[in-house]
Image (cartoon, rainbow, N blue to C red; front, side, top):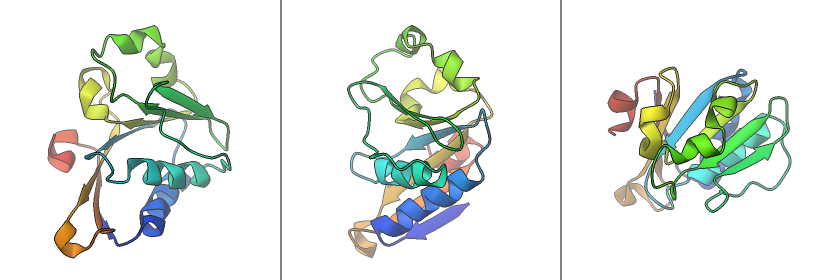
Length: 147
């Protein structure tokens, strides 16, 4: 599925709408360049789970945990040098738990991502405007994210 948005509010709404349908144990993998809106999407996703806390990207802590309708485990693996580092934080407990995982820069640890993950790619196209985003949501990482 491809969705085009023209503002941060619209991108956040796509995150919200995605979270409304989220089920325990689901994993959402976000990919896209720096500043493309992964955290904006996540902010909407958190609201869709009933989380009112301020959402920030856990760039240095790797994971932020939030309580809502379902627990949200928000990962940012940009600084993970080796996927094996994820074992140290107990990623399997998150990946196979009762919450929802949302992983920014997931392509960096794709070898350990479960096959049933939903891949979401967010892209800019400056010819269509500075706030334009093309959001591709699908089950197949290679086909839907170009990674």
